[in-house]
Length: 354
Image (tube, rainbow, N blue to C red; front, side, top):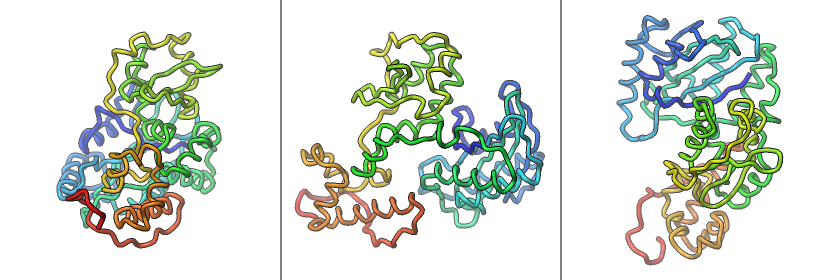
């Protein structure tokens, strides 16, 4: 079993994603089973239109969050494996519990195609009663551990390469993040892995593939016997197969033929780029991060070193240090300590910290 959060540009929004799941419009696919969870509208496909309005009404009650309130999970099974409906519903429920979304509204559909049987789950991240938005922290680890648990629970086949091959982490990248508390280039690529895979699925030539990858500020190059992603601004490189095995040289040349370098690299524009960012993305808005990156100090110090040096004399740095440590505890599976925080707002003066 492989469980991945994914996004589809043409299926953004509660209505579009729900319709995508219920219609199974991809080439060679058809809808097998369909149900709704935690929707007052009902549980069947004929209740979908009302359920969509219900989810949209729930989402409209949350005006604070600006991020997408829809979470799209795809659970794929081994070739030839097709669990019965009771097992599928248990799998859906267990993933919802693990992600902290058990009480949230969900749209679920199973699709069959020529390759494998898979299940789509759409979560409404806005709680139907509190109207608070819940975004799972480091959901990648949660999905992997839950998939392994469910394989044992239901006697499902273990999909080779889910962790040791496809999802293995780069040791140097892990060390960089642990020592600096800043996102590595490897972490940036894995954050956008689903988008890179979608680009590969949609592309029909090397030129289309290069054009899509350039939107994220990276280019594909041949290095040794394989391929690497190279950041176009810093020159930092990462093995493409480390991001996903479907991006390995073998897989890509099977689809597109012998490698063709990007001849138009100088003319391509990026919509998003790898940039310096704290491991906890919320801290990018913190005054301590803004102060570090706006001065000469930030050019020679890592985020971790800056916080550890400044925490003793600066209240904002001390708060950011505690928040960062709390985030690290969360992603490592520990219970974070409660932290008393100020309201995060721009500093009014360049004087000494409060």
